[in-house]
Amino acid sequence: MKQGNYIQNKERWAFSIGALGQGMIYAMMSSYISDYYLNVLQLAPMFVLLLMLLARVWDAINDPLMGMIVDRRTTKRGKMRPYIIYASIPIGVLTILMYLSPNMDKTSLMIYSAIVYIAWGMIYTMADVPFWSLPNVMTPNAEERSSTISFSRILNGIGSAVPEVLFLVIGLVLPNILGASDGLEYNKTKYLIMAIFTVVIGIILYANSYFHVKERVVLPDVKPVKGEPSRLSRIFKCKPLMLVILMGVLSSGRYMVQAAAVHVARYAFYIGKPLEGMSDTERVAAIEASVSTVKTIFQVCAIVGMFGAMLVMPMLMKKFDYKKIVIVTCLGGFVASIFTTLIGWFTMNLYICIPFILISCIPLGVLNTISYAMIGDCLDYMELKTGFRDNALGSACQGFVNKLGNALATSGIVVMYMFIGISPEKMLSSDVIMAATDLAMNQRFAMFSLVSVVPGVSLLLCAIPMFFYKISGKNKERMEAELAEQRKVRGIEINE
View (cartoon, rainbow, N blue to C red):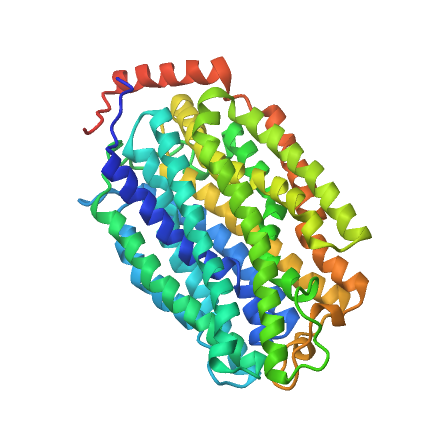
């Protein structure tokens, strides 16, 4: 079987722009929902902890289940593509409902939030698993698959930055337009505006990919035979895939850099004029401008570090083994996090931390890109060894890792609130809004540790499984050649 190019530029762009839209929607939820629940709706921290942990762990379990459903049957419109259309509108509606801030008592509000949050996660899984399985069926060429994944992850990352830009712009402009003296109501309005804008643009871009992407690697539907290994059994017995999943789980702390940034902006740093003597309206505007600025500083670090890494990943992935890229960048990120932590401990000066935060964000871009390509290689390995290729189930493993990582990260944020005794009702109320400088220094540093020491330790741990990963160098080249020959023997055709 030839290893030529199958994906046209128009198709690659359509898929990647769909990834951009999906990135907008997911970032709107993952980066802000914990702040919204804790500080805006002011739900009980223990409730938020249980909801985030249990619902997201359930979401993570749903990914492999969804993968098995997708792998089971091929429709006239494809195996993966139809789910893009089915899930688009429900995801958009649920995202807006998530930030609607209905006027209810706390018990009713918790019930409402739980229903919407759980429903959002389940519907999102229905779209996410098939979408990120598409590169595995768009081309049989491993190099072309990797380049498509790299490019789409770049645009996905750009999409995830859109809510961040909205957060900054709204935070600097809206208080002055509204003349807001009530920080709580202002934040409800801000999040609803962000959600509506993100949904309208994001869903259009995401759904459009359905019309321009083609599934070429169409393996025949195979009915289970009594006595043969199940799909889950094949996944668990694929050692390289298990190592990639372990790498992802151990790197869960990296999600803190984005998920905890808004909390750090509220409770670790204040950047602006002295608050003494300000009116309530001026105080709200100054503190919200500080929160937006600090959050943006972290986002700029992520953009420069993470997206910068994504831009060079296609070149690096052609020249170096994936495992070497992961090990080197993760160890570098760990060292940078040590400097970030020390600077925070002795000075709590955000500006001095910036270059080290930036460096520690580089592995985020590496892992966000390379893990999908590594899973594709693991599926090649599994197909070579077993004759089966469970594309959706294999790719669902990445969704499992992402959601479990987000669950652990978000839960860690809530636990920190409880551990250091921060009360959102006192910090952000209808009567007065408090600045980070009103907190004790040990509380501020503890919150800062969520984006410094925690991600660093996580990066160190996630490099360990890569020392045992064998799909690299000559081994990978030999595997690809043997798989191509095996497909010839099996008579598997690739659609042009």
